[in-house]
Length: 96
Length: 108
Image 1 (cartoon, rainbow over the protein chains, first blue to last red):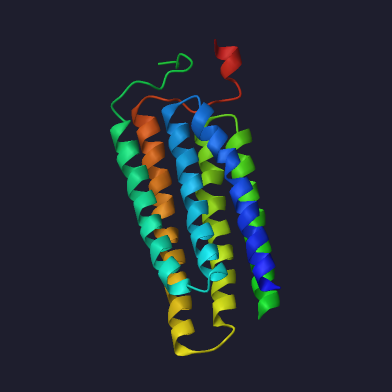
Image 2: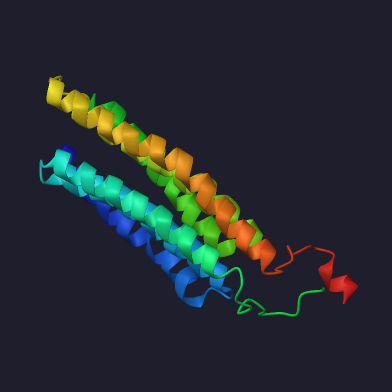
């Protein structure tokens, strides 16, 4: 019974990922895309542990999820650091 | 034990849905930061603690260690997610993106 619960939560998480994916693809500014990627990354961590539970290999998948969370964090930091200087942000003229 | 973990999982999913819909519908970049940062962290906390409870249902030492590791992920996310959101906001501010204000249309 619990396997079904995990399976359907996993499916629901995958469907949920489509919304930030839309934001990541069509986001007006570059930084919106970073938010989309960050949201997808945090959902993937939850999904990884879920898959671990489904395959009764929890220890392995928990480590993978931890590594993935770290990578997601570093990626967000690196991209936001990179995009500070670039001026690819002006989708509408800001009132400076 | 399984009932608790199912409830936690479902509530985690509710937070996740709130987060994802929030990212889409909010008008401005800075407004979108709120759901992205907060709701995803909370959703992750709920879902992972639900899984930790399920892992703990057969009470062995190894299960205890795995549950502790899951909780380690939760603590890690609690520390890193706000910092990541802060970094994005800082990058937005530095790149000169002004927060959207309702009175902005009259100003033009």
